Length: 323
Image 1 (cartoon, rainbow, N blue to C red):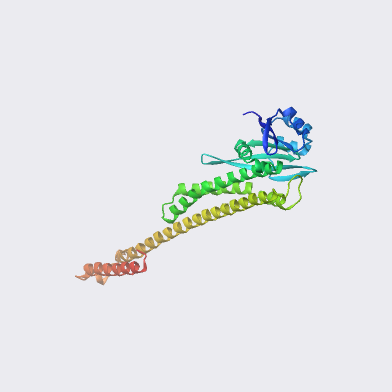
Image 2 (cartoon, rainbow, N blue to C red):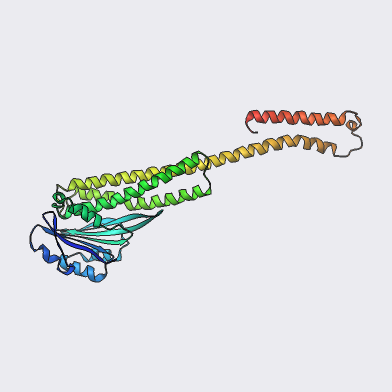
């Protein structure tokens, strides 16, 4: 994939030119214009060119090149640097990437690293709504954030049926080792997504409530919408994690209950077998003078005694629910 995904100039909410990266700043000579540049894992030379043209802060440029940054928003004078972690569902696996956004008067620059969907969809959506794109850089920033958060929503919604299936398996006693392994994997994935989404709440609060450069009042409520989505994602993640935790605890309780039932059955049969064992042990002591040995009905009487006691114990344990 090319490092320069797109470089376009906009005026009055419409795309009017595809620009060369080296000449992108010259497009801003006319007031009311802005450029939107999309990069994918660029090298230092490209970032150095943009730094020279738009006066990007060196610390922000260093972060954008090295990546592996925590979600944050930094303000440098009249410009802003934002880091957002991205999540993408690849098969059954969740891959985490990140997007760095430089924004200021006249420009929006996105730098993608790792797993991340292309922002061509966002660009097309914005260009299809010129009445909103006319707001400029702050609306583009909102559109990118909204797209990233919507991906979180899709991932969490894709995990919901899996969690419900696990809960059903546990409640119907169909769960086994594979189910427990799946619970562990889903809890790990949910934790990873939670670490990605949690810091965005503070970022959205800052964008919505505090005075930050180039963000106009008409666009500020849109960041409140992103904030609501982030809250919903975090709540859904917490609900799914609690459901998995409850399913696991239910599985353990059911297993413990089954184990207790087996132990009660073993204890009941052991008590029943103890009667003939004790009687046979007494008569197996081989003393010479044991009066019962001379009785004509001694042997049948002992067998009857054993049968009666064992039968009484069996009925007693059945009534107790042990057998």
